[in-house]
Amino acid sequence: MIRIREISMPPEHNIAQLSYEAARLLKISNSKVRRVKLVRRSVDARKKPDVRIVYTIDVAVDGNENKILKQSGCKRAQIAPVSFYKPPKTAPEQKQSPVVVGFGPAGMFAALILAIAGMCPIVLERGDDAVTRHEKVQKFFESGELDPKSNVQFGEGGAGTFSDGKLNTGVNNPRIGWVLEQLAAAGAGEDILFDAKPHVGTDVLLTVVQNIRNRIISLGGSVRFHAQVTDVLQENGAITGVQINGEEILSCNKVIFAIGHSARDTFCMLQGKGVAMEQKPFSMGVRIEHKQSAVDKAQYGKNDPVLPPADYKLVRHLEDGTVYTFCMCPGGYVVAAASEEGGVVTNGMSYSDRAGENANAALLVTLNPRDFPGNDPLAGMYWQREIEQTAYAVSNSYYAPAQLVGDFLKGQPSTGARSVLPTYRPGVTWCDLHQVLPAKITDALNTAIPMLEQNLAGFSDPDAVLTAPETRSSSPVRIVRDESKQSISLRGFYPAGEGAGYAGGIMSAAIDGITCAEALIDSL
Image (spheres, one colour):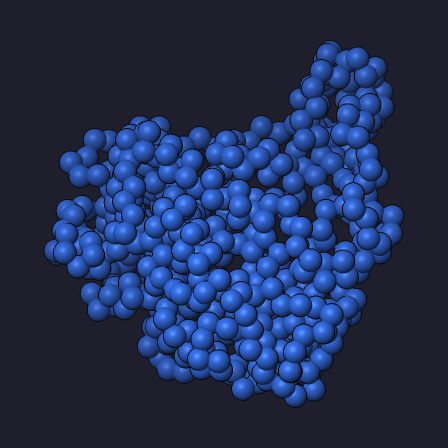
């Protein structure tokens, strides 16, 4: 096939026009274009309000491709490269099935790779299946009744299930395309295969994760819910089994630990068992909400219903750290993401249509081990918990502390919303966030918010809402592993994904889970 880059179309274009544009660029009749495959689609708003949709496409043509390319003289066309990933299809026989702990993106794709290889993995997930989990999460949003074992952080699909389902990543890895294909086949839709910033949406992800689970089971694997690993058994520096729910012992000599960044009790258990861990940089801050229409106007120079809801990604490097936006959710909602009683945590999510009135993003400050209150490997985790408990104390409930941007910059408490209505449920408590968050964070935000206005008009809108705290953007601890992906202190133990400190989103976590599964297979 022939790949053609940078095909620019107006927002109201018809997708069928790509065939005619390809024929024009290749200087052939449209009747010779047999098939057009979308490779990439993005929005170009550099010359706002003249916003364009830009495509890369692969074209199958009648005739000799090299001859057609030479005759066309098109500098944006070339023979389409062939790049694909094939998972291991067979593995040596083993007496014990490998165990995967955690069923978020890392654990899910690790289990899928092991199942494809015929290894019949056993997945242990502390939370509920997706349907039951969704019911409990909705109950928490409405009533503030938290289930510590099954919530936005724990359960089938992991924390990413209650997010925007963003699948873009800075990682360049041949496994990315394969992961996207598995998600699309599980119900995520073909758009994720070519959109420059693919997303699924929480409503669709709930079905996708169930379909992947069913595929793992059909390949000989098993998935157990309400199965929390409460101990690891070891002998001569190697893992020999895990304890489930404080009672059952499951013998195993290969375990992929993909526990997520919020499994604090598990981190403590592992530390007590002598598993090597270390502090790592992470970020904390707030969620910031604007009207989506204001973001669209700032990014596109106009409000156009044909264009997708606009997003943004902003960063400012300060003398003592960096402030940046993360996990931006167009047309989304700020959600209650607590997993421990007596603590408030915020996160962001969108449904697949991104039709909410507000846009929100995490507004984070980078924190390094030198900032942590202590030298314990888990000091960052304890700091997170302290901030979450302080936030809970503001209203003695799961209502989140909130403040208007204008009041925050003036250092005065807010008393209510203005033009931007907060979306966080069960509700917010208006206050002064300087009394909730450490000065390290509030000082950086005070400096950065006016500066970020230079990058996105309206970012420092006095009516924009800050909801706190955003503490779970990534893990504050790393479980140390070597080149074989195994713990340096416990052989047969493979730390994987965000919780282990080796990923920062759905895609990077899935890829890390895959590489750990590959390493496990190689070890046999």
